[in-house]
Structures are given as structure tokens and as C-alpha cells.
Image 1 (cartoon, helix red, strand yellow):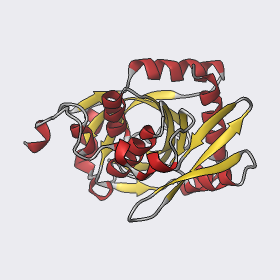
Image 2 (cartoon, helix red, strand yellow):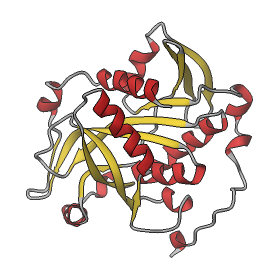
Image 3 (cartoon, helix red, strand yellow):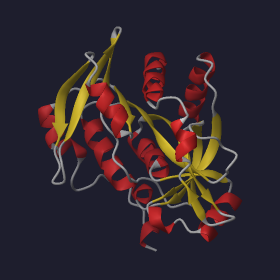
Length: 256
């Protein structure tokens, strides 16, 4: 299979040739990257936020900002949905000096007992996407960096924040999450599903960057009935998702 043919050499086109490096040569080394558009909008309304650059794309340009918190500054950039788009974005941001990435957004649950907006730390991922195979050799599963996971857990414990750990099923094909596939992934130990985590773990390994990723749970894929439960009412009663940005800031402050 083509995806088993891993090549560790640098690509013909490199992130260091991007327009971002020319526009923003130095970025604050810790990137806070939310998926949620409402969180990203609220951040831009804060007086501590300042626009500092743009990532150009034939689809649409994406703003990069800095956020000042006490004596520290953080890079702020919204995450793109799906492994190829997100990793492309991270590659360019890396060329501007990013060393640490705090990445957070929703995931689906395969276990109905996991409540909405439960905080999840992914510790491993089933690689049901294509991007990761170009950053590390082929395998069914990839482990998140244990040092980064341990550091994130330590910080959350210090903050007295409730969380659980989980194996995630990372898939490119949102509309092909069939009941049979979901059953197979549950049998492999997955309790949540997302679209980027395995690729992010592979990118972090290849580029020697530190990623601190957490999910907050959203919809439920019911394998017994084959029904998609958006859990809209349950999610509406949960705390504001902006609280997760405040948590990301606290994590960033404590990174050493």
C-alpha cells in the first residue's frame, strides 16, 4: 500500500518558504489554537488581543494574533477542521517560531455515559486518516507524547480540573462513521472520535514540537441504534465553551 511507503526526508516545498515567515518572522513560542469559531471571535474582542499577521490561502486568509497575559505573550490562531488543513497550518506557524501548541475543541463520544463538555485528554489515537502516514511510519495506532500528556495531567491536577483520558478514533470521513466501524473502534479501545488527533501526534513527533491537546465532548454516535444524537439540550446547559480558552491560558502560563 502507498501509505506504508514512509519517507522521512524533507519535502520539496518546505514550511520555511511560506509567506508567513516573510510577514511574521518571530511568533510567541506558545500557540493557543481553538477550533470553535465563537471562542476565536470572543478572543479578538479582548483588548489584550492584537492582530500580528495573516496566513494566506487560496481558500481564505487566516488571521494570527498575540494575546498578552501578565508577563507572557501567546500566539493565537484558529484551528482548521480536518487533518490535512490543520497540519498545513501548524507547519507554517512552526516556521514562525512555535514550539508549544495548546489545541482544543470538541470530539464525538462512542460511550453515551460520557457527559457533554467532559474534558478528555487523548493519550493515543487510531490512525484512520491519511496525513499522519507522511510524518511517521505506518501503524494502526499512535501514542501521544507521554511527556506532554504527563505535563498536561500535572497542570490540570494543580488547577483541580476534572478530566479523563481516552483513546480516540481519528477519521477523515465524517459521513462514513458507520455503525460497524464504530463497533470495531470501540473494540479497539476507543471511547471518542475526532478528525485530527492522530495526525497532530505524528506531526509533533516528526517536528519535535510539544502538543498539549484536550477535547470537550459533544455529540454521541449510538452504535446500538445507529442514530446520531447531537445532544443539543445537554450541551446548551453546560458551561460556556469560552471557559476552555481560560483553561488553555492557565495551561500556557504553567508550561516551562
